[in-house]
Length: 327
Length: 148
Image (cartoon, rainbow over all chains, first blue to last red; front, side, top):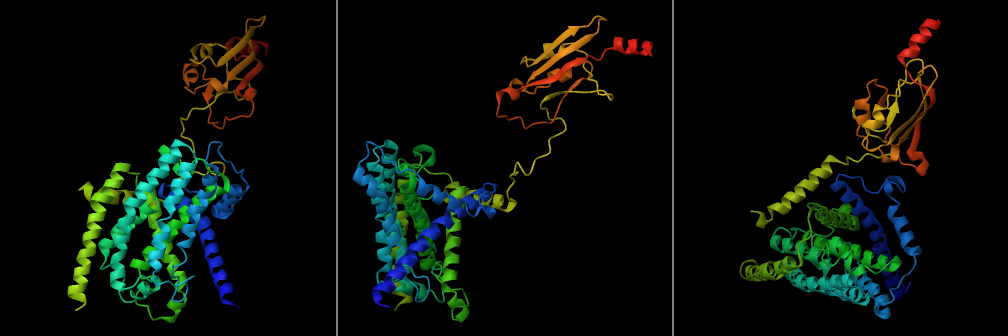
């Protein structure tokens, strides 16, 4: 098989992973939230409600494709894809095993963060093009929030990058063979989970959706599979952020004390997925536990607390690494 | 202390406790909760052992009902006893207060535990409890005794 064919298969596999993830994560979210609220969650369609999201997908696909009369047609049409495509791009540098990634980039981490930072563009487009005040408010909030939390997210990522001496995600994971970076980089890890939660617009930072005040915000006027794309992107972002956290802080595919074990290494993708899903569970747990904070609190928290702390942590760790660890 | 995140951690603790408790949901059509003994639902007539209603058509329930959902159409027979033409009960308007059963001097009606009252047709919300029966009456009982 030629090289182009191999690349195409990898990309298709990743697309499939994204779609399957979306279906599985929506089911998982509903079950987890139900359990946290002492409910059962979906349990009517199929055994344990397993086919519920499949039925939802069929519903979304067969729905009428509505376009609001006063919408900016071109922007309205393209916005879901502008949200969805970067979210798919961010899957490409993820390393699921020692030699298992769509592409191995030396600047994989930078690529991933750059792709993620394109998403608010699509969100603002969706909000603007809908020509509805709720959508517009949602889109604007998303933009402000994403700009505010991009900075601490990138600063938090710098700690592991300094320790590994690389931006290649596989190299960062290999550097954690003996010590997961969550222990030396605990402060960076805390900043990372807060900023990641805000970056993917998850509760308690889901200002752009704000179900109770904006009624799904920027996705307000969307229906059918266009809404499906926006929804899917949200869940795939959750997966990306969790996978990135696992790669940066929890040793990727490594199991502690079994780093040389051939069985553990052959199960690398499975271990990576399990760790990622545990991270997603924590995000869902937060979603079921915390109320949404106010917009001004959200922005103030980023600019007045997270950014100064992460900046000083970067400086402190850089000095420590330069003066104590590397001599 | 709350500013340092203890409130947030407490929130996580509470939801995890909920997780451990497991669902308390009752799967309604398949599972049902047992009603408490004194639960009040529809008004239902009581019957004697021989199948005749205990109602004497004294009309106290009708007067007592705050919602006017009970209606008794009574006619008097030649021998002075009463005959119930129709005992109509508007279930849809009843608030299950139980005043009628409390007021009934002959213990002839009670609040049943029938709570699945939703119906497709409005006509189902008006029920006929008793129709075309003689009332329980001490005078008739005495008369039957003498006849025998």
